[in-house]
Image 1: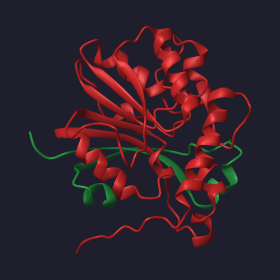
Image 2: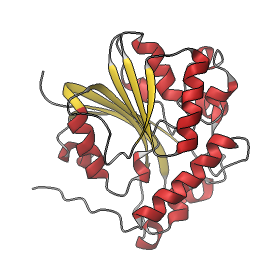
Image 3: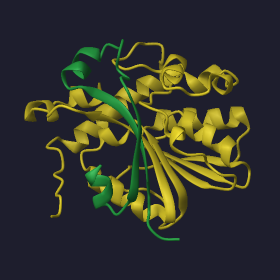
Length: 47
Length: 204
């Protein structure tokens, strides 16, 4: 999330993390690197 | 201390071409079978409201290829101006178009022509006149400064080697006080350099 903050966005909140490649043909590579689908929000300061 | 972010060492032009080829297939032949999940089963896995998803025609859902659900991070408001980066066949954009209503507007940006064509057909199918789809790159968004209330994206920024450039563009197009709701892929183990340079791993 550091790259998000470096771009000037604030109030970063991270939501749930999902093992989105589970059961897919990409599962093996995804497991090797502990790949997950995440979701987050952040805000542009002001207003 | 200031963090610095290196651009991933990959041939950007070749990566974009490979991504376009992959997602052209997702648009035109969604039942082919990919190294990632697509369509209704994926929407169910990502906790989209299936009572809503199941009201959509199959062609609106079948090419969906996200990695999480950006709408879980906050509700869109009636009248919001929304940007969807890497909008694909329009699944998230069209859901957003319903949420913001006729006084709101959704712009989907995608670099793959077949995805944009399918997204436009899907918008017409749903009768959504407040959603448009444009050609563009996440690193050079075709929108003016401070023009968006909310930026969403789903499974796209991980395909961009220069993530700081993408987030700076997002910052540029957001209005002060505007927000992002982004789903993306993270890897929790360090990637070896040869993996970072392997375009097959980028595109799945």
